Length: 423
Image 1: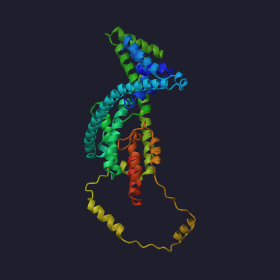
Image 2: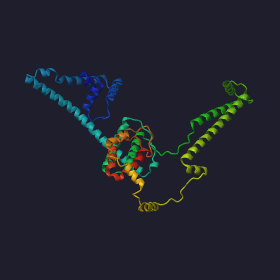
Image 3: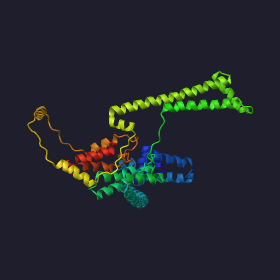
């Protein structure tokens, strides 16, 4: 309210100007405060009578008294009189000293409380982050839980800011992290923020998808169920002891089809049920034929295995040492190449004037642009991570990571990136 009255005295009573005055008085208090929020708080105070009229008058009177003591235009018109100028300077200096003295003490106290609170929050966040990181590193990517969606709010932004600070500290202390470890850091941070914001336990859900019925099949099945229901009502209506409610339902069914003969209507409904059941079987057979034809054109081996109902299973897989010996013996044998072959000469002449590819580095800006162009509304990939644009520290680290070990690891990083971001 004090800032509002100050803006009123200076004749600059707008949301932005009031917010600027408030921010100058409170530079470190509530960093997420906006001009709209501040204006809403002022209206709430006045509409709900949070302050009495006497308190508002006292605040307004003190603001007007302060601005009366400030130098005005007459101050510059009497500069030739040194005594008057010195007196006004003394009054102004005393006022500024009192103004800063009262507000500075309050702001310093609030700032110290906020800093101590932020330190406590970040220490708690760091403990929870290390605990989640230890749990995440001991499980595979397939065993990760699917994190629920959270709505945007100031509280969520505060948690994300604290978590970013913890991740930045962890990365600075461990500059030799690889992309897999970075992925663990991101998921552990997401787990901590989600648990603190949602305040619910996140459990592993089954990845087995339910067998979805096609829309055309569900539409036909709904019609069949409705007709079976009508046949049952017509059957009950012919019984000796029947309620008026059932009779009324049977009458509505006859009126709907404009057939008042119960036997005839019952026969028509049964024929419809039979016809639509055959239609479902016919459509299923056509889909199965189409699927088998497609499989035969794409993978004949898999098609014949399906016909024979054979599931290929490996009973005794080779050990890692056996596989390593097999491939080492295969690749260690020197191969004889005929460098004078005609096709090699033709290909060399064909690409003789082709220029080599220019070297380039993936910068931090390139990575930021690529990540920000991704759609946040899409489901996460194999690693259960999305919204990477909310973790700015990862951009710089990833761009450096690609060039740290030279060109011999480019293929490895490309494969890992495709696994994480291209799933």
